[in-house]
Amino acid sequence: MHFLDQAKIYLRSGAGGPGAVSFRREKYIEYGGPDGGNGGRGGDVVLVAVPGLNTLIDFRYTQHFKAARGSHGMGKNRTGASAPDLVIEVPVGTQVLDEEREEVLADFTEVGQRIVLLEGGMGGRGNASYATSTNRAPRQHQPGIPAQEMWVWLRLKLLADVGLVGLPNAGKSTFINQVSNARAKVGDYAFTTLVPKLGVVRHRDREFVLADIPGLIEGAADGAGIGDRFLGHIERCRVLIHLIDISGTDPAEGLRIVERELEAYGEGLEDKPRLIALNKIDLADAELAEGFAQELRDAGADRVFPISGATGAGIDRLLDAALDYLPARTATENPHIVNSDDDEPEGEWSPLG
Image 1 (cartoon, one colour):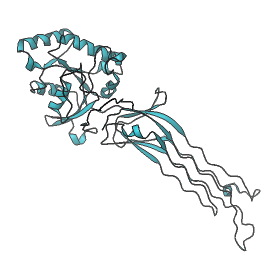
Image 2 (image 1 turned 90 degrees about the horizontal axis):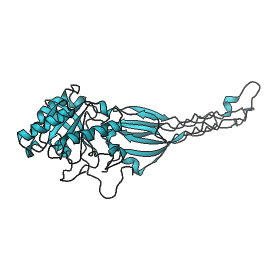
Image 3 (image 1 turned 180 degrees about the vertical axis):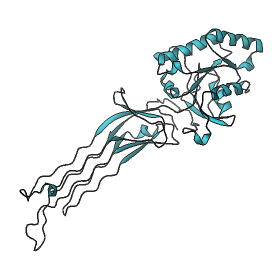
Image 4 (image 1 turned 60 degrees about the vertical axis):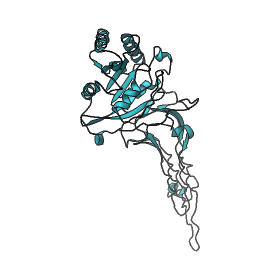
């Protein structure tokens, strides 16, 4: 299954059914009078957040959603049937924006959250409702309230407790595979991760969701590499883990590059607490690792955790520190534990569909 985190869709609620113009016609009954019933109400467009979804891929193939209109009124004072609501299921973490993407119309942060985005039209009045003592044979009626329609953007921001950032090939995929149930692709080249990944971490009788996003490079805010569009998936995280490759040319410069990109993106990411992890210490001796750790402290890192994603060395201390930022809860209490084991996209595929 492909990962899709943005989709543009068309929504239209149901129009109200028209009222009826009818007069009672029965044998032996004179002056039967008006008996046209009212029209039925059109269906609402309702969005609801459901568990088990972590992509908007369904909206790549279906972009138009139209609720049914209400039935028309009928004689003998029969009211038309109201149309059922059109219910659209979205993943938890989905935001609904207007067509210009300037206003957030809805934000789904909890399972079961339900929002009526467009209301169906009211049914029109039949001629029976217009009868008065001075107007005993009215022929006017209402056609029903028209439908509402709009184009909206759906934007998914995955819900995770901890976010994983770093330069390409910093070992993020190896790390998430080591500590969670994720099965991310690992390769000895940059950008092996093309879409965000989620994994459930179980540590010290606690569970939390870890999100891995594609690597950032210098100029990502201006579109370099994959760009910074996937940073939206860690906006809701409580803490970020920044992995730095000890075998890189300059770990301190790598720290500064990612920090600059987070600051350029904004949305509060620059203010989130960060844990700096010096990864791949299995490739260096203890003296070299300590020297690089000191360089990172001099560059502004508060605490540096030397770790190895391949062997698991030092990871327990890092996860202990991450738990300090998370509320104490078990997996059954975590509202957004979702597995993300989807395959990477193949060929020339765009996240925008």
